[in-house]
Amino acid sequence: MTLIRARSRDKTLEGNTFKKLKKRPEIVKELMEDLEKVVAFFHSLNIEIIPVDSRLLFQSLDITKEYGLFGNDTITVLVMRRRNMKYILSSDKDFDGVGWIKRIDALQGCSGK
Image (cartoon, rainbow, N blue to C red; front, side):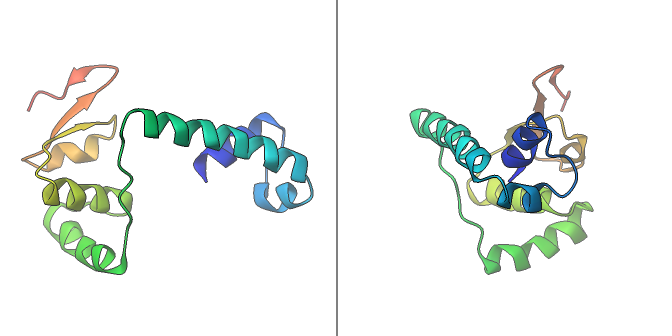
């Protein structure tokens, strides 16, 4: 959805984006072509997209309590823990509060942990 919102701004659909998109199916089709390119790119890199289920959402409450994170960050931490991953490429400094995660900022290098 973020891609749709970002690209729709290019099409001057500020404000209630989705309501305006319903009236402009030709733009929706164009946006879907962009989304297909992103999906193809992910496939070319063998990137796995992990589904989020209700069990994961309920477990995310524990991450909020433990690290003070919320939203998508909690899901990310849970998936990283399950997959035994310790590096993340992100500009989000909130991950610096999770001791076992080493955040790599693409603009600044490693966060020093």
